[in-house]
Length: 128
Image (cartoon, rainbow, N blue to C red; front, side):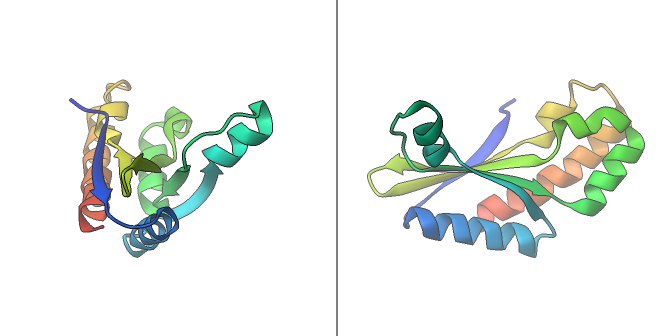
């Protein structure tokens, strides 16, 4: 099982970030963290890196449900979505498969919640 699913877009990096953010919000996810990896690596270790953004997406209702099932699941939240320059005018958007990460917990009830979140995230990525 892959731990993510992805789609390649033919647009600019900033446009891909905006489209992804808008699609996540339309699906009920908020962006609670945003990390500009290129900027961070330049500041911290003075290296040049391709455009790469990590969005920490959270659907409050699904997070609440998961936290009520398994109180330590917060260690695995939020769901990360990345946007990166794949070269050649292509931008890749990839999202964590929450089912893959939640299997480590071994709670069948939580796995059902993770399946619903996966479906939501897959729809977002496929719709870009």
